[in-house]
Length: 430
Image 1 (spheres, rainbow, N blue to C red):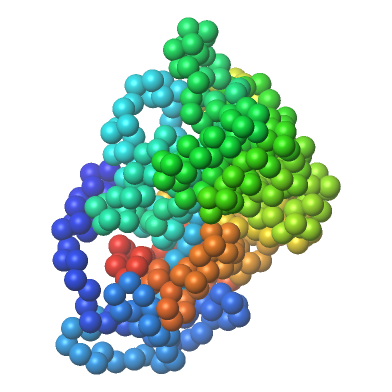
Image 2: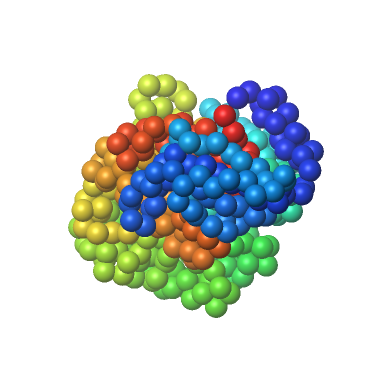
């Protein structure tokens, strides 16, 4: 879709009547029960307001003139998908570094709104936004209030980093620019500053805390693998977050930074690119979630190789060194029983392509059913939202996706959503 068509669609959705039909009956030719792994034939999902009230065998007839019947008899129907690592504020461009100095918050917000709708129409009805400027939290509020269409958003606000770390936006700048930037509120060193940084994000409305325990690929530091927080600092972050009812997502590539974060009790390791055997065993033992973001590694490595000059040289080198190793790490961790939740790092690549992650996980040895479970049951558990999300069951939000084909036989079907409903409202219907 073009940007113009997306904006027109958004306007139409916002102009639609707020009232729900008495009931919506979805006639599902094949319904995937993600718990049993079975495809159930000829099922009806009954939706009232924003919830599923029943899942019934056979095609239930409308019982009143206001009932809305949706024909999905030639489709495969699944729970709404959950992406546990996106950046809705970000749009990939060779101008990203320049735009950091030229875009205003309002510019970022308009772009983020388009990215949110694109993500929703791709079948992802819930996302965990793992760091932005704070616009991500405002976008969450706007979506929740019905002001703009988008997925249900769990926002980390601004991600927390050590000085010189992955989320230090002054990396690589000259001394004058570093001095002008002062001490950004997301930079924290030592346990006391780490506690304060968590409380700052909590005050600003974050749903979770995101930190970086190692360097990254898409920053101007020379190394993306070294540990950047001590275990004591991470423990201070985790304990403070827990006191405030927040979970902690941890960006980490290198093995030492992963192990420190896992021992300190983070909820998830995101990327985990260079896990060694000790880190894998530790994650399996502690049941720490792993959010692999394979598509991000593939995307940056392919861009560095095929588009010379797109990235600064230091980033291009790291993209090739780190991105090419992520599928192999995933294969080892999956075989060892590490718990996996779906996440893509969308914003590093184009939003709306999130479902490519299913194919990359399958290539690395996970069954199609298990890849789907990572984006439904597992992701809901990571978020702490199993009562409302992750499966098609009575009482849960009416987050429903339909695709052409059988994704248990060909997981690429996940790339072809033809119907998307979030909280009882259809945002795509073909």
